[in-house]
Image 1 (cartoon, rainbow, N blue to C red):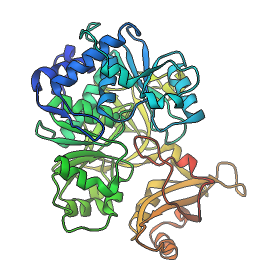
Image 2: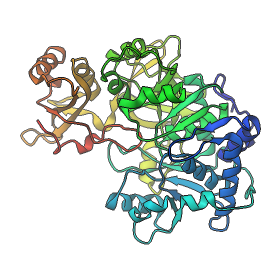
Image 3: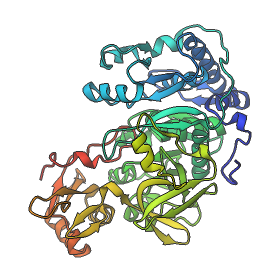
Image 4: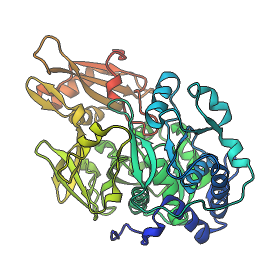
Length: 500
């Protein structure tokens, strides 16, 4: 299906991960693609195409069409090549969060791979994998000689392309089954949001196991011919210096990055950077426009997820960041709000969204209950003129004194207080009240250059919030537990780890 203003690759036969790599090699040839770093050389588009062919040939004797292959890898040029090489070999790359260790990693390998599939990882990381894992050395695969060949016919847009983990913000991560068309469409939507072009340089600091890292950065750059500097995690203190040194012009943000960058000490050269546009989930409305003025960067916001792609995008002209808008519906999706405010999405093309959750029919049924609409689990508000504003997760809603409270409302008010860099509002069970009742807690990350003004924050909250939404307790944390890759706050882990 051709989506006006979004679709760049029109033929179905070209809308797959292997086909996009081969197309980039033909179109962009010797132009720089993955930039060099201290640990590895850069790759042109032609070199990336040839390398993925060679690694695929090396994998071919070990994997068959449709086999799942785990990747427990850093965000690096070699790792990106391995992901696309697995796809070229006809297998399915299963991206594992690379921050996990011990029992959490063992549980994830078991749930996403079943323990019997090979896992590609750097040799120095093999000791972290569960005992008995069939580990393949990333360095050996990339360096081994092989006869370049395409092992299988190019897949169709609806065929399974990859398995990516969910962010895990409300519990254990699930494996999301994503078709090839989803990845290409996600990349095209990203290109439309950032108005990406061949002379762009992408600050690719999102992890490869995250949909923005693999599709929003790498795959999008393959489609338009842009350069990518891969690195993870991002160092906030050196963020703009990296952009200047490598002439990076665009990036995707999440996990409060806008607030964290805005909290850095003001420098006279803040606006002297090459970045022209960035895209991401709604940032604090109170700081977004100030961020744009200070750094000379245009913020374009949208709503997306691993499962459903990017069905809402704010127009570059006519953005309503200050209202918390995450955009309007993209052609190719129908959207509506359920009675409780949950966003429901109906794609015009089945390949735009996930096929399901790996080995989890119950969770899949919750998202696809049989009414033709994808139930996102997110609460949004129609704020007029086709714009929607994010109001929180259904699982996050706090029930207090018989009323339902959106944590986002509390967080917005708290973020407007000077010194608050990041914030998370959440509910905790209250034994003294009826079943299901909760107390409201607020955790904040304070600007390290300032002394926390807890009394001032409490007065500010009391003045701005209705009494039922005022937190019973406020806690200061150095940082929040965050999901690997997205940086989203894992609120389910906050109770019990607060320091008042």
